[in-house]
Amino acid sequence: LGQLSSLDFNYGAELFQDKVRPSSDQQAESAAVSFPYVEGMTPSGKRGMASVFGELRLHYDDWLTASAGLRYDRYRLQGETGMTIRRFRPPATFTQEVLTFDVDREQGRFSPTFGLAIKPGLDWLQFFASYGKGWRPPAVTETLIYGRPHGGGGEWMYPNPYLEPERSSAWEVGFNVFRQGLLQADDSLGIKVAYFDTRVDNFTYMAINRQVPGFGTGPTLGTVAHVNDLTSTRFRGVEYQANYDNGR
Image (cartoon, rainbow, N blue to C red):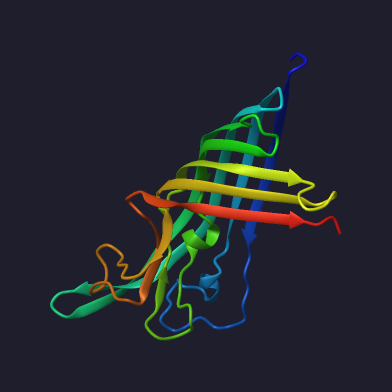
């Protein structure tokens, strides 16, 4: 683009699959009609992820760097899960029922990123800012897990076949310092200080006191499940980093 500027294009694709295939010789407990299987705490299933991405980066006169990128992710999660539960029948009876779910979910999303870095007339100092969106689909275990984590007692983990992917928006501002020959000829010092602010929608966390709608007598401390936070979750703070190399 001329003597003072250059343009880089970084592009690629990514493909991977998480596959869970448990097996056990242990007998299922007598309370389990169809679910949970003994392998319920490590549920059988698979999640495939495919992504393509590209980023343009412009460098001008060794003091300005600007970038813009776009990424597309798509996932498919497949597996079978379920739960053996008790339904309360007034006045004081319970019936045991089995709920099963054949999970086959597929979804995709675009995630853009933008960045800017400037050197204010000093070779060793750089200011930077960035903004981007992110996306994280639920894992096999988060969606399909079911059973007693400790083999007994009143603890139960419920599956959540309706778990939604997390969506994030994040921005960051800060500065970098890089000095060579600070105390001796071949040493170097690197410093980074940055403020970050990330907002996540559908943040996934493990919640206690869960109850399957329409079943049971009410939630208890021992019933847990992975759920989406229906409000926005924020992570923000300052990150510090320093590195010194004396050359040896």
